[in-house]
Length: 110
Length: 114
Image (cartoon, rainbow over all chains, first blue to last red; front, side, top):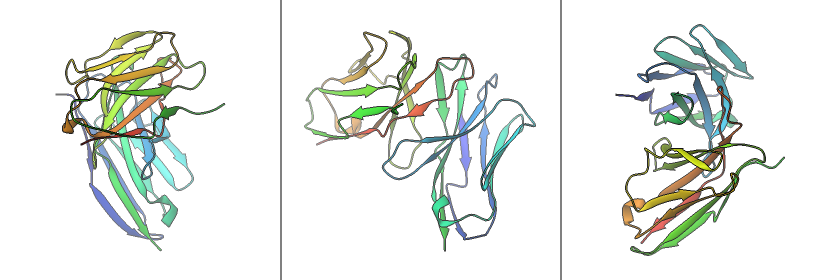
């Protein structure tokens, strides 16, 4: 069964306390893995796309990595403004359908 | 240019009524997706358009749900005989339609069925 699973469901960090979020998938035939950030009451905002195992991408305090079965979103020295829900998504076939995880709700305390 | 827009931002209706939700994609984007998001969950795929045609409608939950994109730009999601379980945020996303597509989401329409 095609599935995307994210963990943990929620994460509370102190400002400056680094951590990682996990996204594992069983969608066959990897076409890419997408990370999004979603703030309350808004649509998901695109962060990264990873296309092959071993690939890494960085943006400010965020770094995404990809293996054959999972992806990690590493957050280094987070700030309160990094608080949001982080979603990962994997496309099926020729990008006609995307499977999303349930997200990790990150709360960074000052 | 402008991002994806959706109207209305909020819609409250009564059980059994018909509703239409509109999505204006980014200009020039040929790919358009509709999703439904319940509280605490990730977006759930409903339908995908490439141009004017529905290339994949496998996520539509039943025949009360229908979507159109007659001119390959604006899309409308139509829900007949609404039920309380249809209450959710309906998200629209558009993409350039390439093989490495990135989706750009609108702010969503919050539908509440009383």
